[in-house]
Image 1 (cartoon, helix red, strand yellow):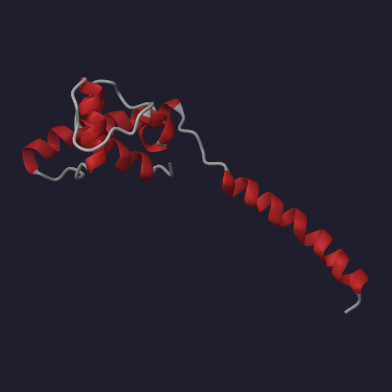
Image 2 (tube, one colour):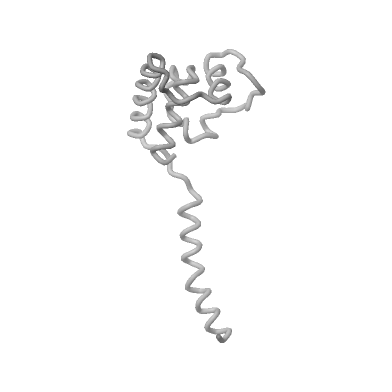
Length: 116
């Protein structure tokens, strides 16, 4: 294979790789409908989970963020800043729900299922 053929092939393949990388590199931002649906799902899951024990399990981060949202000190070191800006799975979470670790877990699960 000549050097000219290899250069042509590279010139054809490079844009495909660049476009694929750009589309994968930028995550989607949740829409208002996604946020509303996940807030509703989290509310239902928390109510059902408290009655049946079938809700998503809160993580240590959920407990810490909930404590911070309530204005109390949570377990472990504080991450500092706004955790919502760092984690797209909690973007748009209801402010009252953010105070409940179980709500946070259910909301994150819903957002993850929606592709965020």
